[in-house]
Length: 269
Image 1 (spheres, helix red, strand yellow):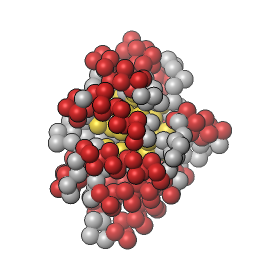
Image 2 (cartoon, rainbow, N blue to C red):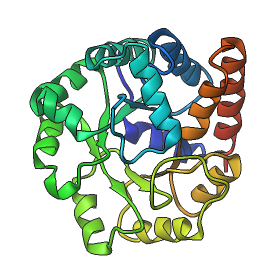
Image 3 (tube, rainbow, N blue to C red):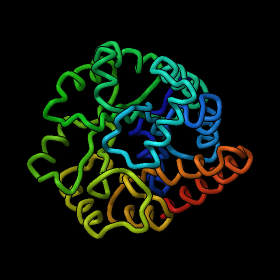
């Protein structure tokens, strides 16, 4: 199946006066088949794009929700090869863009060029390696360029303007803004520093900005969009719904559908 680009969905959302909503799940959580059904459910409920995590044993940027999702995926028998199969099947189902969020050891151990080649064949749009700083990302960027993939980078409160300028020159797709210092996880509110960070980044670039880490409520989505972001990324809150309903898939899918529709509605300005 052909795939839409990130630039296409950001352009369309702007024309429709709404923001982009991107949910995050871990491939294989709680098991391969259920996880694929969840991904398809997200597509069917109107998300603009998807972010897929490959399970990893030491996810330093992730909090308990994602860590437990990784463990459930491993316990169900997920491997890297099954992850590639997962994204291939997902691409056959949808033309919406999706990217990966993973860790450098997975890429390095597999072989950078080979890994990116397989991602291209699988239909992925972009890659975000959470623990790879842009200063050390030349090999990954080259592999991404060689395979027509976009390399996404994270910007946080600790990113000064000089480093930000360098990132804007090499980033693809969108800039991922970490709304908090620390690990992923649902939070009760958006910090004031986050809205200030969005405004500061916007002064330096017109590249789309998506905010993650802690976004879990409709009001969070509205707040970051009103501050100048182009989209919101939600992971832990969605993963918590999966974790709370593993024994009852009917309830799981119903709650996921309801949550996604509410969060997408919040992107409409």
